Length: 264
Image (tube, rainbow, N blue to C red; front, side, top):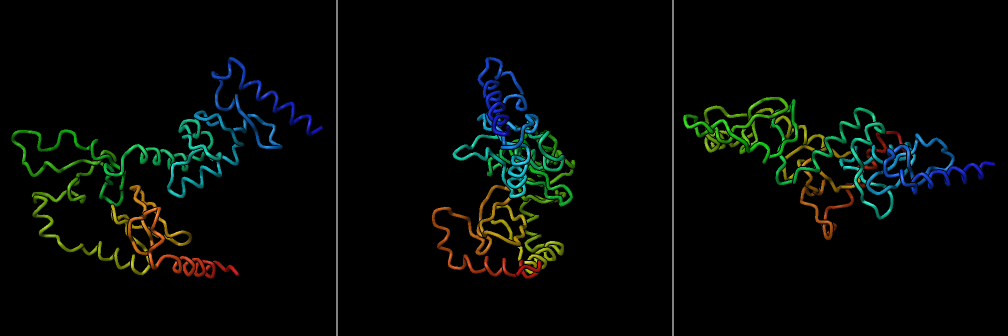
């Protein structure tokens, strides 16, 4: 009886997709397949770009894992790299995960060379350098030319220097600021001390601090740069395993993590 029900549902679903009106159906109306035992069409998620389908539960797990790993999720089917439609994912994800996905989409739309982050810790919004290159505060003929690098974060409305990548340094030029501030401030020194204590690493591209508690040393920063957590060098997919100190720290870190969590 169950096999008859499965066959009937499969036939009806395929008929819906092949019908002349299939192109006008929503992702929740026309599907290519379903998870065995799931007879509720409303619980089938369709990827519009490639027409692959999956049950909501499996797709949610896939999307959640990729988002939390720092990646923009793609179609999970083998040999398919189609994008997931952001609007379609709104009904699939929790509000928090949907917010993360919107951020990942935003990150993917900005080339790595154009990415910059608001230097204020309470904000840290991702910004696009070309989008910030509009009229500057020095565009007026009577304005101070030192304001040429002054930009305003559209998220927190705070002013910062796009050249120095720090909060706005007042009446000092960029050269003066760098000359008078060759050493990190007390807050930066405290952060570096904590990073050393916690074995954190800084991205070699944007200096963002990253913590690894378990897993592979191949890190992908929010700026898109991939680097080795052990040696700090840029990751080269073809030959980075030549790194002489890669490997053993992974095992030691994982063993230490298992001991802390009571694993045997």
